[in-house]
Length: 92
Image (cartoon, one colour):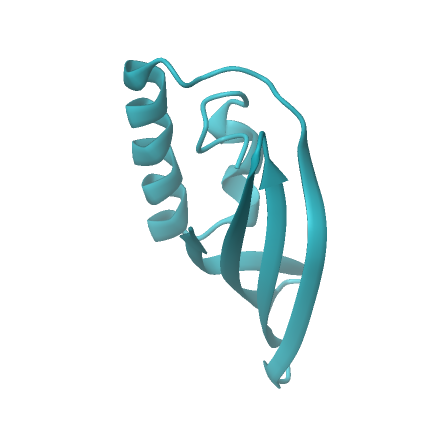
């Protein structure tokens, strides 16, 4: 969310995302900067639910508090070379 909101540089998370997810976050970031919404503010994770789809693949539903909004996120993570890569991301 910090990258999508323009508060954190996108290259910091490049190694943890697939190319499609990274490009999507960069597009959201550029829209946030143009709209003037960029800036640091605390984001709190309220709840995380994880489901292992199969060995090495998990899907997670996350509720975060972003300013005064509760926002849902859905992620799909694939295990690759001993680390998790976000291969799908939806931010509500």
